[in-house]
Length: 145
Image (cartoon, rainbow, N blue to C red; front, side, top):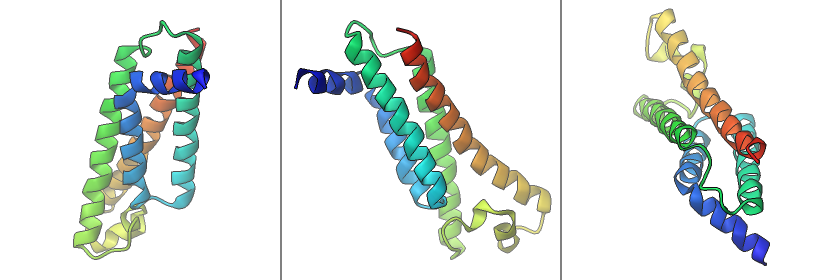
């Protein structure tokens, strides 16, 4: 029971980052394919598991590198904002969720192929960068012990 309590306290130390990861999961579930949502859940879950184990084994830790934690929050919020922006565009254009995640889906919205590719790369890239940062943050906490 005390191990579970210490793990909950560990999550409490990094609640802004965990909340950002939860909001990210909600945002991508609105429009990204299921395989990407599942991959994101595995990465986020693994990071939280590593963090809770690390903080539970060393209660004196204060929540990891604050700079990297801030990067997790900032990149997560940017990715969430971009995802919700394009979700709104899909809703206004009456497109299926995720239609603008493929270049072909942009033919309804724009006639410029460069703009279409730029948008697709930006959408996928922002989410992928966030997941890499979360993985580094989570795994870095285990290596710091």
